[in-house]
Image 1 (tube, helix red, strand yellow):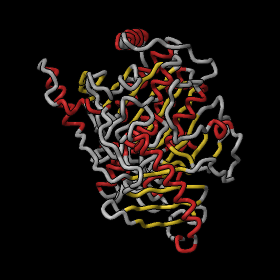
Image 2: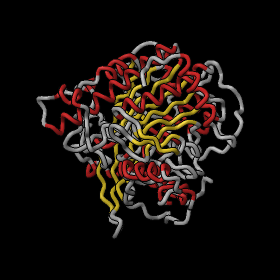
Image 3: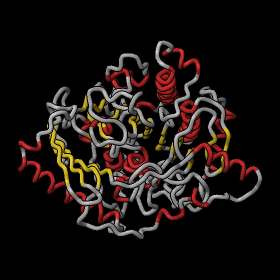
Length: 491
């Protein structure tokens, strides 16, 4: 869809949007305060810390991301809550570590009992929309964990990553679309934003791209910019460049609508760099690992009304911080908020605790835990083709597993004295790795000072036994809290 829309098209979009709002949605408690921002949350899929021009990539072209990062508040130490996709997305939606809700790996889901940022902002008057990759539940009607059941009033979503000419789910109805995948996502988001602005409504718009997740299938015009590279890199870089272009159109359209000044635009990725094609810069590790290369991601906020000059945040921040930050900024206060792992970054945004080129210590340590559970296959393209075929034939969905009807079940109870898998604890510049063998419960420790060893190359465990003891004690206390939540204590 063209970014220039005529008035008649806008009226049709408004009517379609209004018709999709469920009659059983709870009434809004109030209109948002005039000073509360519109919110646009943008997330790439598998874009590593070094997969942007502004972090020094020598070949990749990301001019729009680079411009935004140098005009707003850039986070140079922003961590995904997990080293893979679904768990990090759950952290953004809830402000909680994903293990608290059993979202251990890719293809796992939210629990319906969780409070999402869409529900919290909807209840104080925001219009809410989700566009692109979902991957924390179902995108079919009747699911307890589709975007609509999770607080989004309008959605055009995929079960997982998606490529060009995708089949997506519009409020549970499969629709075949034409176009480059990132552009399709942004076009849908802009329709939603247009309708909100026309109706003078504050909005939360979540834009989760399906790129640059494999398989990489860039348009020829985007590949040609990297003709000197091997084919696999042409496609990988080309997908990121197309995503960058769609992001640039999103920014431009906010300006054209006259709402960019008071719109908080937050960009990040769901995990660290892909092996072989992605870049983690100087960091150790990659997607799937708890070393910083698997966790650190590009991130920045643009919000001209409140961030009037470019700044760089060196404090270690986390995707779980997005939720509590937005609660404070948008004056939302859920009545039964469970334990949060994230912290509000409002003081950072306002500049009260940060100066350029100065390392500010995070006031609370960060925990990570890669629990030894298997991922769950979510073949988005096949599932959406099946759904489209079923709906065109007037048949009910043939595969009820796609609905994730068991998402609310809390049947398994996890022991409070076992912590299998790879966990990490970051307190200031120190990072402790605790790796517990799931079979015999033997534990291996690694300790790094990230301040002078960002590549986690020099294991200092032997030199600091007391520090390990203290940090491990704090980590285990946190893990016990996570298990209590996992066992249902928060609901």
